[in-house]
Image: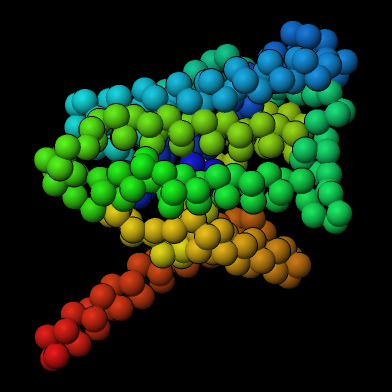
Length: 276
C-alpha cells in the first residue's frame, strides 16, 4: 500500500482510496474462489481471481487518473470520492459483513516463509525492486518526477502529462490489488473496512523516507527503510502491551513531528543561504 501511495505523491497528488481499493480487489478474489467451491477451490480459480482483482484495482486507479488528468480536479477530492464510493459499494455488496471460506493453499502467502524470510516480505521486496526500476530506469519514472516538479513546464516540454497521470494512478490501483490479495491470504477473510489505519502509515512512511509531499522528489529505497523502521516501532509497542489505538496516536504525533522538523530544516537552509 505504501508503494501504491508513493507514485501519486511523486506527481504532487494523493490516493486516499488505497485501502478500499485493496479491499475491493480482495473481495473480487474471494467471490471468485467462493464461486469455484470456496475452501475446495483450485489454483486455476486463484489465478483467475487474482487477475480480476488486479483488473478491479487498476480500473479504480484508471478512473481517478482520467478524472484528475482531464478535469484538473484536485487529487484529494477525486480519491476521497472514490474512497467513499468503494466503501459504500463494498458495504452494499457484503451487507457490512466479512467474506470468508478461503482455500488453505493461500495461507503460505500470508504466513509462510522461505529460508526464514516471510513470504509477504519477499513479495514486498520484489515490488520495491519493480518500483525502483520503474522510477530510475524508465521514461515513465522520469516523467513522474517532472510532473511533480512543475506540471505546466512539463506539458510545454512536450510530455503528455495526462497520459502519465493516468498511468500513475492505474499502477497505484494495481499495486493496491496486490496488497489486497496478500491481506486476504493473511486474514483468511476480507471486509470493506480492513486496514483503514494503514492509510496514515503509508503517508507517514513516504514522508519519513524523504518524499516531498508536494511532488517531484523521493526514492523507493529510503521509503522501504522508513517502513521497516515503522514496523520495528510497531513491534516494540506491541511488546510493551500498547493497544492499537495508542499506536495510531503515535503515528499521528510522529507525522506532525516530521512536518515540524521538515519546516525547521527548510527554514535553517533558507537562513544559511541568505547569510552566504
